Image (cartoon, rainbow, N blue to C red; front, side, top):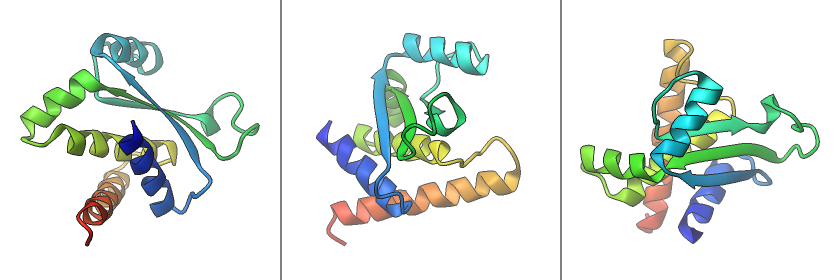
Length: 135
């Protein structure tokens, strides 16, 4: 959990949101499927869901609170194996993806928005990985 907290802080700093706060919630496939069905009307498990506070109730009460990122650890493990990655790397990728969604990035709109989000994800991933290697 400490690693996830450190990654979250680094992502927020790289996004120039030093005072930002995010809840990271780990669930199983059944639970994330329920949320995906209820909130996105897609009845299947997914790897990560984001619930931006700014779009919902109470966003003006605590402006530094971005929202919740929900990650399925079962899906993370399966994707790590599928992509031949370490579990930690896949978890970091999903955390970056989820936090960027909280900040308004979207890959389901236009192709330009998708490319912008992918570029930012890759930039943040590289920065965090380089720091962990002491580069």
